[in-house]
Amino acid sequence: MTTAALSAPSPVPALARRPGPAAAVANSFTLAWRSVLKIKTNPEDLFGLLLQPIMYLILFTYVFGGAIAGSTHKYLQLSLPGILVLSVVFATLGTGMMLSADVATGVFDRFRALPIVRWSPLAGAILGDMVRYVISVAITLGFGMILGFRIEASPLAAALGCLLILAFAVALCWMSALIGMLVKSAQGVQLWGFLIMFPLIFGSNILTPTKTMPGWLQAFVKVNPVTYLTEAERALLTGGAAATAVQRSLLWTLGIFVVFAPLAVAAYRRRT
Amino acid sequence: MNDAAYAIETHGLVKQFGKTTALAGVDLTARAGRVLGILGPNGAGKTTAVRILATLLRPDDGSATVCGYDVVRDAHQVRQLIGLTGQYASVDEGLSGTNNLIMVGRLLGLSRPEARRRAAELLGRFELTDAAGRPAKGYSGGMRRRLDLAASLVGRPRVLYLDEPTTGLDPHSRNEVWGMIRQLVADGTTVLLTTQYLEEADQLAHDIAVIDHGQVIATGTPDSLKAQAGRQVLEVTPASRADLGAVAELLESRLGAAASVNAESGEVSVQVEGGGALRDILRALDDRSIELTEFALRRPSLDEVFLALTGHRPEPETPAEAGKAGAAAAAAPARELDRSTR
Image 1: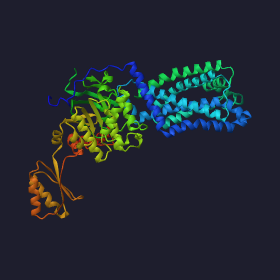
Image 2 (image 1 turned 180 degrees about the horizontal axis):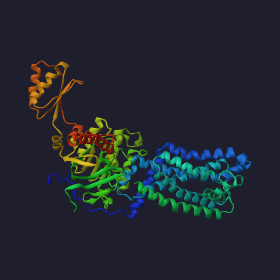
Image 3 (image 1 turned 90 degrees about the vertical axis):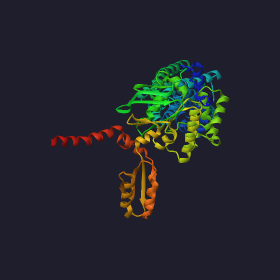
Image 4 (image 1 turned 30 degrees about the vertical axis):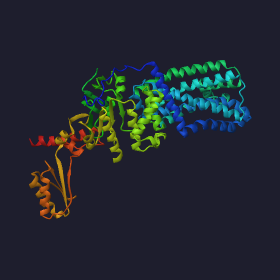
């Protein structure tokens, strides 16, 4: 014992009972850094993130433009706010897919055996994904402007529009996180995600005017949060009365968050 | 001061998954600064025990402490003491080796430069410096395992869990991992090692607990277990099958134990007490001009340990229930026969 003083284990020090609030923030940001780093090191992911909005813009504008609005430019002014919503809604699927992969590969086990704040992997993933949504919004707006989209409202309104859509994405990604915790594989998340997202996206006024649809579908469109968000974005980017649509979008955002965040956290606790 | 002689202690650990009993009352003790090997076939409950000790699973019953801290009540403290390397290397494939380790360092509260320094140090020690900047998804199995081990050491854990650390590794990588484990133990780390390989437990562990069907069926040092498990086996293969009978007779007379003749492989095997008689046997075989193709002394294998301790061979892929059901079914007709003769 005396000769091996250097290698003998020192007495167990007094240990903290639980991590403090500063650790909670630090842990979450470290894990957010990780998920941003993954965007950079995964070329397919980055490619998809950049190319998807461009693909949507080109396809929808030139395929539907002439038929629906008479000219592609007119249609772009109408469709771009919707495509903004669509790109971000699909981007939220990434949250669930990543979480599901983390559980499957055992990375979460590593996190959970570390003395970190229990919910920080979830918070970190969502924080990191905000970067994805910002990229998605920036690409859609930027490329849209190259194609001829013009912001007709004030810059302040446009900035509010971007914030509103990011807030919606952050709320919706808790639903994605919930799916990620309930479904066993990333492919499963994609399947369930699309089954839920497709009706939300296409059963809305994003691409076509509501009045061309049958009554039952109009009823669905009128309660669909995507519809309100799209209306709000149109008003904030291209002018018009925004107040009601923004209010309803915010209510929906809050509602989605209040329902799905606790569910996702509960599912996460159960799974981990 | 929490200076317990045992770094790990469990009492009556029970864990069930639905109808499957993974652990049926497991008592384990690991001495501080030593290696406790948990030996058992697939599905014996080794991983479940490790997951409970790593605070990843709650036991249904019983208790476990690490350095005196309860794994359920004081989970956060336990996490500050342990490192975990799973059977399936849990590195983040999307990140480079360096970033994997920096991430763990930052999560453990190291500053950015400290985390960077510790990452470089560990990558060097695990011979991963050349691959440090590449995403881990391009690593070979051995490299991944080493990175996983490095990640579990970032926080200089006092207690390290290694869940089948060499399963699926080639002999070279396995030897490297063994070398690293020995170094860690020399530095004072307590190691809990699960393995399916008797040889691995024999090489590394100071104490061994053998688990089967969720229960500890034997504990002791490697030597004491091998003594329980049976003696060494001498295997002799004559060049000509015609000599099989003569060889068997000779071995039986010299060693005083029954020899078994495998006509198919042309091999005679017999249990050996000590090594003294071997030279006599070789000489006697030579005197009779019996040509040999093999003359080998074999240590008892895991199979034989199990056979000796449990009376059955390990059933890697069959769940516990199937084995029991089979045994019950086999016993039933015998009982009926019993009754009819009475």
